[in-house]
Length: 573
Image (cartoon, rainbow, N blue to C red; front, side):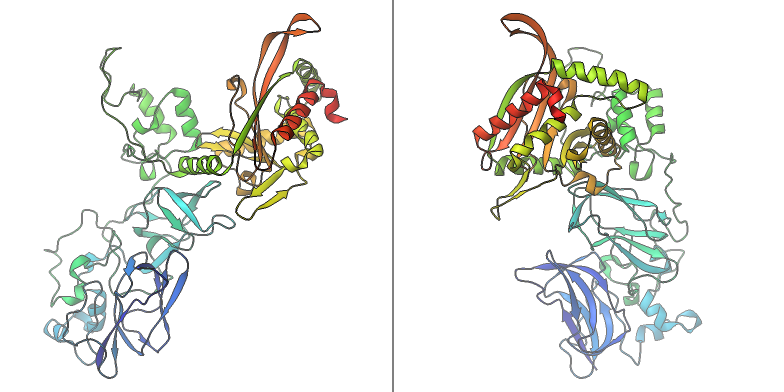
């Protein structure tokens, strides 16, 4: 019998390493040539690795989620014939090794109890090294949105050693459109978490490894996973490589032995210990907690969180306020209004904030903007709006603000200039003009800027438009918006309401070609028919993609909107 060491082959041009996704075999299995032994993943695809020989598996190198070097050892076999490695060559410490069939000198010298020699040699002689009993289950990141290949890990709700229940929240991940809570498909003990906050995780890649009761979903290797994702033997090898296990009474035990005292499932309420968030990470908290903290003027990074993974809950805010905490000073209050401030705070830009930064940079980099600003007399519009709101009280209809009227003006103006209701793919050189008007409504949320979408604005009356704007904006703010509610806009409205200022230069929401930005309405003295009169005036700041929309066409479009808003009866004519 010979020893054959199979090394990870080249799995793609220029690939130096690949991630081990899962095993199809375990130590002791007999495999045939070309049988699948493992799945590995590069940055492009998942690849099935097949055995180059037939034989018995004696060692596996690596755990799911681990990065393996190309041409590094992957599987060791006992084969007929000479093999490709010396029989007395020391095995790699990465995985326990089965003895050749026919004898185990170490086992003979130290016979295991109950006649389970092979089992002890495979599973390790020191049960205290095993973090949890049961089968291995690797939970892979599910598809979190149509066409999404990866997502950013925002934060963990669990840690290695935690006992979790089915459907318990494990982590928050974010796509380019929304933040999604990932729940556990099984109950068990967390053995390893794969990834850190801010890291991109591939869809279909390992997210959490569990020990579960019953049958898992990957083959059990001889070395159980430790809490940091390595084998039970750590860097020194598996227990089966030692001649005898140390006595249980003298064996060093980890600080938290999850076999003897499993960690209870983290509660969504207050835990027994609160801790501060890492200053380099965004504190974990729900949108409702963030809103309340903002209203109270509290910086969440100073509030100890008692929820899973340090998540801050309403009770934590109550306790912080009751203790007199304000969180406005890094070094504590000095008692002087004019005290010198020292030091800096470094904050990693991750999650939605990073997506916003990338999106804005892409839009400015790729789109040559032209911004056109015009003032509009909305006195008549405001009179009509006040009249309609007074009538709405009698019928129970909702209150109207100015946005539904601006939306209607855009819809009407686009009938004359449909090209502005388009997406431009500059890489393909293709302009896609949409017949339907799906208006994006830029909204500030506790998690940052989002653009929920009012679909088919052309088919809505003012009250329906107002109701839909309120619905999708509210969903974006409380985190309940679906992916389809945050994508697919054909033209965007960006308004800061009463904070709208006098003028601004809005950035186009790529791949759209235009964005319309109303500023605040103020009373100003203007000259009308040779007389100085007080009118309600509003500036309209709009930006256009100058590759598609010429300056003349941009001016015509805005002037059309101006005419419609100054004579609001024409909006429905």
